Length: 237
Figure 1: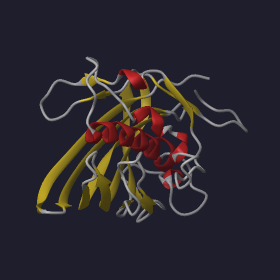
Figure 2: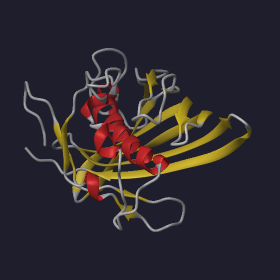
Figure 3: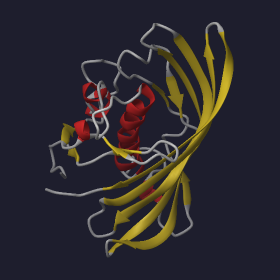
């Protein structure tokens, strides 16, 4: 639901589905209809004030549509998908009070470097992710690609690219075994912004990374990772 002056934006997750590798996608019923108030000032450093107001408690015991408990990696992927949505919806597409933001894109083909470049954030997720876990963007750019249609509505097409980011994550499993993940990743995608309302009609994200995972008593292993997200927005209010 869109906010008016003096009011925060309220968001409702209508539906979220996950697909791992070539397996069929699964629904996550616990997130259907989840409503929360987006708070751009909530950094997530204080556990009583989760990052951007997104309640982490809803992600502790997620199941698929058949009632099977999801793994930590799937639960974390669901959470990060919504965090990434807000990065696109509430960071990349909002005018910036300083530096080059989307407000500086005037001509097709023009590209700007966004102030989110090289920003470093602490990663928190329940009790599984421990202190010292961080993610840092690379150089973030926005480019005005042109105009297209989504559901019959003319939209500006803006491509974002977060450059090569770095991840360090310290996790602990149910047996108390600690693992450290170090890696790099790059995510980018397209944003379709309704020219009449300036709301996002559609957004995509593609991320590719290389991660080295170290666990005490075991040899390190290297994993290649990929994520693909597509979101559609229903605006009310």
